[in-house]
Image (cartoon, rainbow, N blue to C red; front, side):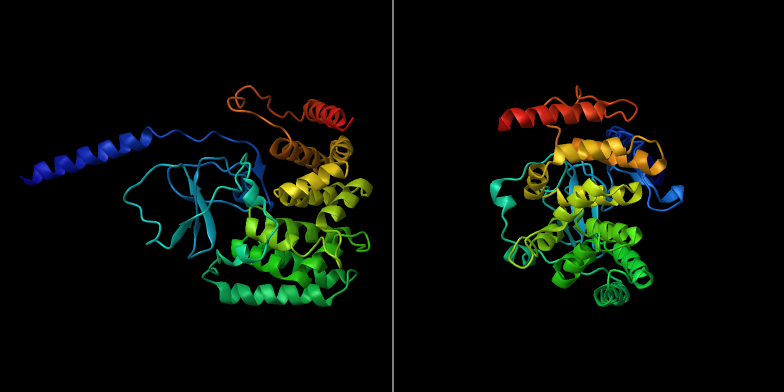
Length: 348
């Protein structure tokens, strides 16, 4: 074939490829952003926005069902994209593995998935440490040591250690490492309690704990395995419930709602919360956020998100007819009252 003929064939191939990519559905825009710093460039949507390419999934993002989700074993980073078949892709040769979707939004696990046996299941799928595990491991060990050796009133030592621990716990690997360390998990639980006088320490303990187990099923199972036995009859959920009932600082309540949301990815924990009067607690917390400050506005949003993610049931085809949560109306409170009426009807 003449040179210009090869060039023409290449151009036709490129145009065809671009046309095929243009036909892919665009992800629905979301204005609900998560911001952990004061820099707008660091914000990202609460609901993961998928494209045809693999993108990093943040630990506190919600994943819509039906995506192609994988864990990059070289980096320890969770990634997802639209579920587009690609025969040329070989996940095994690229050092990647597919994550089962049992932790995705809207998925109801089968009974065997909800097993309380946390032993062998945690070691069947080891997580490879991230590439910079040596330097991060040193930081992790240092933070853990500081937290373990200082009492709840040692605020100056605990705050930087908890901040470092929370930052590392965004990694799937370090989140699981935290959750497997029983003395550390028990110490974080103790720091959630009112005996820790510093609200900032309690808030950071809740944030670090919630970050480690958020969208990390193995870490959540490992953390819960350290509680609800003779020496520790109660767990972090009970500490969260006590805080939501008796505390008034919106910043602390926001962190406790984050931890509650992370814990209730486990169905047993969600049921424990409901049995402890969870609907009434959510009503009280939502009402406490009515004054209108920024923290109180965030608090009401967290209650609404918890309601939508965990308690609002929708059947097939209901997605287009369900009302959108609106913080400018009493939609959330109306839904909570409906749930309360249903709960009363069942128990009466």
